[in-house]
Length: 460
Image (cartoon, rainbow, N blue to C red):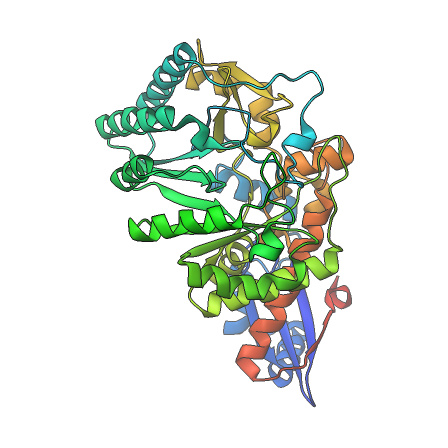
């Protein structure tokens, strides 16, 4: 018997005791041992003794036979999760490429191809788009599809949002497909009519806000360079008055990195039920100011924990927290990797919403697109298979089970190849894993000041 190359052993030094975590890096199955329990386990392995603990470690592919092939287990996981096959779960609808704001860190604007002309969907294209989506719904045979209104700023096309909600709801009802509607908006264009429509169709609203006025207004500004905090605050009051639940989408940059925990308190006070922290992506044609990765992740983790303890879901960290604690592999972190289609304003269909203004990776148009065409589409195949179990650099990464592979757009922007690593995301995920490991041992033992080291090298 031996330790699988997909497993890790971590040693934790406390005040005067040692503790050990043995875990499977992909399956997220972890076992915590005291020093005495660990030494007994090692002695049993050396002597060839079998017991309940060793059997459980074998069931979870942590302790394996001498002829065990990790590559075969990975192939089994791909087949078991159908992860190399496209499965439609998300549909993005983008009706315009323009925005009424001019946020200083906008990676969409800063990635706009110099030859790109801004687009707004016209009525004939809208009709073709709805017909195409209805056709997809009728053939998808899905229990649930998530429809996301996105932009630039989606509320610049309120009439199309309203009509599409009605059309999509009817099409999904006919096929008994459950719908989830979401919109990500800058929160400056609300009115009573659109909010009533949101309420009718149970649209989940996410409003972009980066903190209090003195923080938010450094980056989130109008075309005339005026701050947006006051207008967004009024919009949030409208949502509260209409009893429409909403979340906050908060982009992290140099302007707010030191106030993330305080932002949680502010957003909760304003009525938010969830928070999504966004790490700035790299723009294609402009150097967007970034935060040092160590500081960014330390502050992000601390803020997310504040949110969790207050009963507020924060997506960026907590989705990894859930994978770790529920022993569920997080194979893909991006919907574009085999789970979504994006409808652009001119009728193009792609896989990544970040390519709004530098159109790339189109898989068809609304004129003649059929879901069956996806099976033989090279772009769909390229994106669907772009996740850690297919990336040699990731195979034996200790954080692979909570990762999902990061952002292909970011990888391509930095490395000129979407199949390359999203390196900032690698650091992000590794930092979270270290925190989760230390946190799990601290909660079980009561020790607060732990030193952790990976001692897997002793057994491989």
